[in-house]
Image (tube, rainbow, N blue to C red; front, side):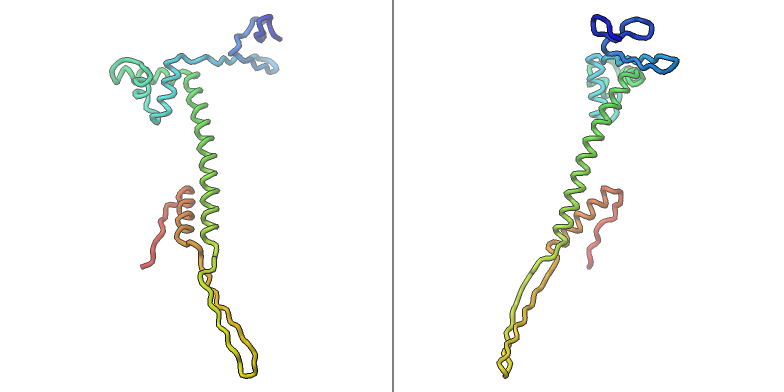
Length: 174
């Protein structure tokens, strides 16, 4: 049910703000509110993700003031706020998804490269013609095939293995 303002009406007959969502089950109504982040909290989230989870550094970069201990306390306070933590997790999930797509594309390209380089191709060709005393002509064709670029294929396979956690290197024969 919606009010004249377009706001959803909660189970107690009170309008819910646009950023709130109600979930009705058989006996209870759960109200979850997506609390908007302040500008500094958004900056904190951005810097926290960019610097690999350094809370004090993120607080400093977001414009919070104080010594290292104060900035650490601010970071801890921000990280303990559910809406800040939710935003960090949401952004990290987006990044993981983009990285997964990039990783899949890299795997596909490496696999294509390994297969292309592992194909065999004609390296040289020679022909011999022999005429027997009875006039029979025998033509012999010698064709030498080789892998197009074995080393490139091995390097592509090694990179695929590294992506899978197998860090054994390519060993050259001596």
